[in-house]
Amino acid sequence: MTLTPDDLEVIRLSLKVAIVGVVLTLPVAFALAYVLARGRFPGRILLDAIVHLPLVLPPVVTGWILLILFGRSGPIGGWLDRAFGVTLMFRWTGAALAAAVMALPLMVRAIRLSIEAVDRRLEGAARSLGASRWRAFRTITLPLSLPGVWAGLVLGFARSLGEFGATISFVSNIPGQTRTLPIAIYTALQLPEGEGAVVRLALVSVVLSLGALIVSEWLVRRQSGRAHVL
Amino acid sequence: MSFEVDVTKRLEEVEIAVSFASDAGVTALFGPSGSGKSSILNMIAGLLTPDRGRIALGGEILFDAKVNLPPEARHAGYVFQDGRLFPHLKVRANLLYGAGRGEAAMTLKEVVDLLGLGTLLNRWPRTLSGGEAQRVAIGRALLSNPRFLLLDEPLASLDRARADEIMTMIERVRDALKLPILYVSHNRAEVDRLAGQVVPVHR
Image (cartoon, rainbow over all chains, first blue to last red):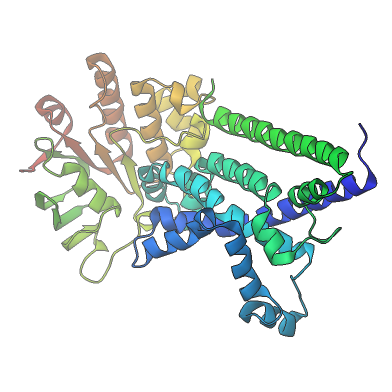
C-alpha cells in the first residue's frame, strides 16, 4: 500500500492544523486551568461552563457559532479582516481555530486536574524560602503540573486530528486548505471508487493516534521518573 | 534580636490569641494538638494573615494594621512538621532552593557537615526516611539565610532514637547560630530540654 500525493497532502495538512491548533491553545488552556483550579471569583462556574461548552455542544453548532463570530461579516472576523487583512474562512487557519476550540475543554480538564493535585503547601514552603510568587509558580507549581500538560497536549492533538463537525461547518471542505483526515475520509466514502483512499487514510489515523498516545506515555513516565524513581 | 508577637485569628472552630516576646535562643510554643500552634507559625512566616495584631522582629514590623510583608520578605527559616521537601528536586537542589538571598551565614558544606547530609545529596526526597527528610528540611531552612527559625514539631513523625538525633542537631544550630528559634511542640520533655522560654498555647 502506497500513499498517493493527495493522501500526503491531507496528512500534512492535518498535522499542521492539529499542531498549530494545540500549540496555540496550550497557553490559553493553562491559564484557564490555573484560574479554574485556584481562583475564587464570581462567575467561575459560568467560565467553567463556557470552557466546557464545545465538549457538550454538537460540533456542528460550535462550527456554526465560529462562522457567526469569525465570518467576514462577524464581529471578530470583520475586525480581523479590517485591522490585519486576515481571513480565517475557508483557510487552514480557520480549521486550526476550529481544532483549537474543540481541543480546549479536554486540555483544560487534564491540566486543571494536575494543578489541583499540586500541594499548595509546597508553594508556601517555597515562598518562606524567599521565592516570589512568580518564582514559586515557575519552579514548583509548573514543573509539578507538567504531567497534566503532556496529557492535555496529547488529548488535544488527538481531538484536533479527529475534528470533523465544527471544521466542516466553519471552513467547509476545500482540498489543500480545510480537507483534513476525517473530512477526506468522509469525502472518499461518498465516491464509488473511494474505498482505497478510505482504507489508507483510516490506517494513517490509527497510526497517528497510537503514536501520540505512546509518545505521551513516554513523556509522562520520563517526567514522573524524574520525580519518583530511584 | 528579639521577637514580639501579639496576634489574633479566628479559624473556623478555633480562636487563636497569642502574645509573647522572646530573645535569642529557643522559645517553645507549647500546647495540645489543635490549639493553633502551627497557625501561629504560619502567621509569623507570612503564610496566614492574622485578623489583627502585630508581629515585629528586632524592631522591624512584619505585620500590623498597615504592614503585611509577603513571606519572601520575612526571611524565616521554616521547618515544617512534614518536611515539605520539593518532590521533583533532589536533596542538593532542595537544600539550595532558598540559598543566595543575602550574605550566607552558612555554606552548603557547613550545613552538610553539621547535619550529616553528605551521603544524601543525590537522592530524591521520596527515598529518604523521616529523620533524613527532617534533617534536609532543617538544612534547607538554614541555607536560606534566615533571620529566625520556625520549627513545627520537627520530631513528631520520628521514633525515639531519630528524635534524639534531630534534637541534638537543633541544639547545635541553636548554639552555633544564635538565631531566635520558635519551637512548636506538644511534648513536655522536648520543650524542657530545648527551650529557654515557654509560651503556653490553649485551645
